[in-house]
Every structure is written in structure tokens, then in C-alpha cells.
Amino acid sequence: MSEAGLRFACQPGCIRCCDTRGFVYLTEQDLARAAAHLNLTPEDFEARYIYRTRRLLRLRKPSGRQCHFLEAGGCRIHPAKPTQCRLFPFWPELVADRTLWHDTGRRCPGIGQGALVQIGTAIEMASEMEHAYPSFYGQ
Image (tube, rainbow, N blue to C red; front, side, top):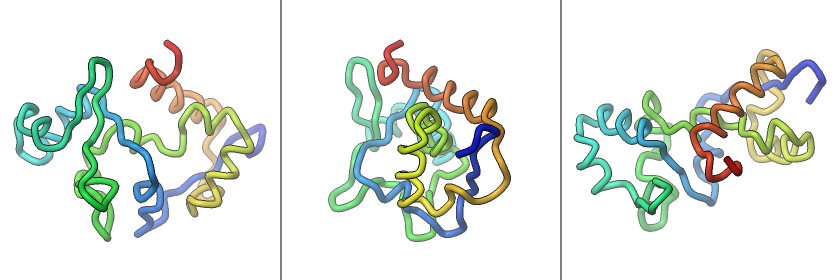
């Protein structure tokens, strides 16, 4: 990571970020976009794929897999993927911490590749995560 920015370019065929332990969280807008992409009502999409708590929505995990939509060739809902997925690796904790960015680069071959993303742009993208998931970022 330099003072000027970060390099990242998603690598063709790579699904490492998706095939990692953890949960995928959604906003209400993410739910609506994914449902529309699959020609489902938001209610049907939620009934099939979402676990809802009082404050959070997350994708249910299918048995033995990380995500219902992860396939060998990539994400089945890629054009409508959740904010968390769309913004990776420009998450606040990764943009703010050189060590975490580099550690993530050991798992993600796209980190360090591609055109330079200006640091201001990276911070704006990270800010979108903070707004989408305020309970994660103390807001």
C-alpha cells in the first residue's frame, strides 16, 4: 500500500474471497436487487435465502458450502451481489490497516494487481461499507 493508493483487480475465475469462512450480510436494497435478478419477490428470496435478526440480514449457508450462489465459475448473482461482496477488498478495516491489507493479499491474488485506486477513492468505497452496515462500524 502506498500513500497514493491501493492496487486491486479481481482475477478471472478466482472465487477465493467467496470461498472463505464467514457470513455474507445484506442491506434491504441488496435483498431487493438479488430477488429481482432471480425473478423472485423480495419475500420469496428472503424465505429461501435469508436469515433475519432484529438488526441484520445475512445469507443462509447451504450444507457444506459457503453460499447458495457460489459456483465454480463465480457468483450466480454477480450483477446483483450484496454490498459486502461488491466492495471487497475495500472494507474500512482493510483500507485503514496496511498489515490487514497485505495479509488479505495472501488469500486474494487481485490485491496488488491492476490500476492504482487513489486512496481517496478507496476511502469513499470503505465509507459505503460503513453506511451499509452501521452496526458493524459503531454507527
